[in-house]
Length: 298
Image 1 (cartoon, rainbow, N blue to C red):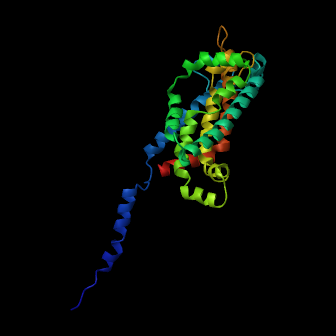
Image 2: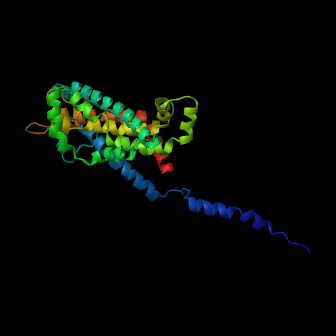
């Protein structure tokens, strides 16, 4: 009995069908349409325009800002306005204070949050879940409720008008602990820790040699968020600092006159924004890598 073979066209087309089905089921990217690019350009333009407008106003005179229609091209008075900012207030000292506060808080939050996240995610001890819930629960308490007792504590310690009063309360955050706990629970396999223990590493050795390298993408994301929060903090530094102001308090003093000089205020705002942009450019690859890694795993 002779068995007829399938036509060549059938054998050639059969494997292609499952591949097309897999592409559709797995959501392979399709070619973007013109409307997609238009929407993306609109979003980018809307995001960049406030920074560009600050640059335009900072490079113009006060009279040019009030013109109708408004001026949309940068002028030639940027460096003159920057000099006015530093003459109007001690802006250089304010920038230095913000760098000290934000840098200290960022390093501390990243280190201690990673350490606590390692303990909560990978170590087994009594009361672990209760302590984690208590730590996360502190994040729901509004900051304003603790201002008065915190200020009284800083006054008893003699830290009013000192940067320590702004640094110490922010050395550890509940969000940082929760974020690193969730990340390290998935990013560090238990088998890798067991292999480290077999090689003779103690608990802190595992943290230093295994956990910290694995936590770099998440640490970059947490570091950027923490730096931005500490850099933009206004309420608590305004309460506890008088003569030793941070950059946000200095900006408020630029806008506190009888009439607001928008050129002066936006020039100071532009100067205060540049460090955030530099930090993002330095940590950009780690930040995007951390976000993408979390998206793929979650």
